[in-house]
Length: 390
Image 1 (cartoon, rainbow, N blue to C red):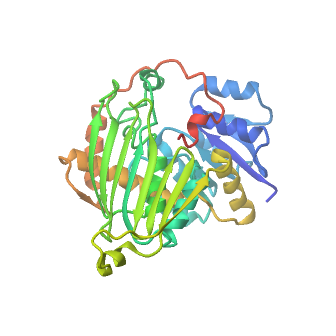
Image 2: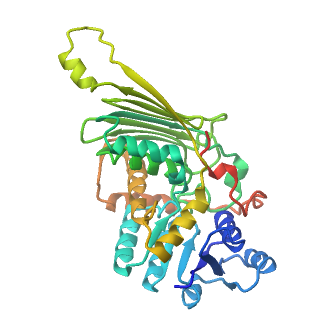
């Protein structure tokens, strides 16, 4: 294959940013040959600043273009799976924006289509390119931290104003977006949480609807999780706090790590705390501890995922963010909604998605799209707000 020719489906905030990045030649081996959007005005903007790019209002026509090897999907969340499935059925490689969709059942259908196609399937979990999260994963997965005891993530610096929610009629509605902060902003963090610590066995959640904004869905959520080995986790997120916090603390039997302010701090115990507790004759034993600190390196973010996806198609490289991984964070957020809708009951994982689908459909029936406000002016490029914000 002489380079990877991609079509971008959806030319909104993220789609236009991807277009500008690729069209300007920032991704080696990838070029844009087609763009699709239902908004003609957006297509005209693409036409004015580019040449040789086919433009479509129907993504199915784009998929019929022989000059498209793969697609980048950046449409509203509930359309991710159906669009990606159509692309796989046409033999195209797929890179989908997060979340993979809004329901576990849709994600499962997408996974099946991806497996059948044999094509490369990636997801835009750009925060996986952050060096500190990758180091934390290595430390936990390798056993350097011992057996996991507890993780606590406070991620409340996803601040959004009412103007943000007013900027699109689909935003913060059950029918248009399928949820709030858990489905829109926090998928990055929910993905990293499970990527580093593994999947929990249960989720108990408290999702506060419209606490800080005039919206249908949650703008604050607190999750409590339990793991097979007895470890526990707490995840707190909000779009209504300013200044917010981004702090991840993970405790194991051989030490503790804290990620905050662009630094990973590591306290490593000389021996396993559980052994000390069981065998020491001292009631207040002190375990010798070594302290280490790691600074964040450059974060390639979206560009890193685009380049990684290109290399996977052209050179057979391993994906940093396989699309199949998208089902995990979605399972956690779906479970959180189920827990809230069932009176904050504990939801065991995995769960049958039938009940979730029924309850979400009921909420979507009464969901109200609004006309939307003016488009944000800070679009078409990868802004710092899309990186890890400490």
